[in-house]
Length: 181
Image 1 (cartoon, rainbow, N blue to C red):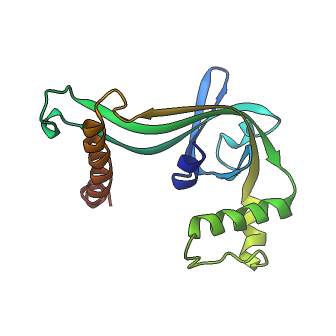
Image 2: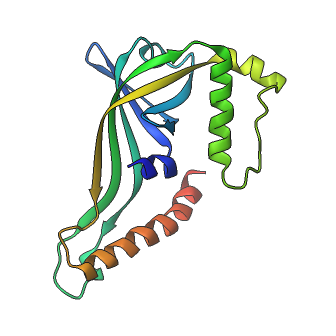
């Protein structure tokens, strides 16, 4: 599950207030037992990411439709996916220097392994930008992995489904991006 978080760090962050869900998509960085992130202070969810409030986090790995046409033997259609659901409590990082350092750490993590860009902690723009964001950390209290990968199938069928998952996630992105961008 940690590997899913590291490879797919864009999380769905869910908070609830007065039975109304607030949902934001943010990259989060895993540090043993915790997730670290930052959010625009003007985001309505920001006020819910303080004071040890409960939060639900979902990380989404690859997913795809598995067609019965891929198999020699009769199979039913299915959908394979990788998800990680976390429950935790969130608290604000109030120290401005820690928020800046978390932004540097996140950039370093997201730029890995080539490090084509290095965010300088002392960059004058950081001093302005840090005033518009709120840093937070989530103490992870509960983990749940949702890995539907044709486990109930034969080894041969699992292998076919695995390659379909890999292939679809490589080939589906270009037509999609051509349509939305």
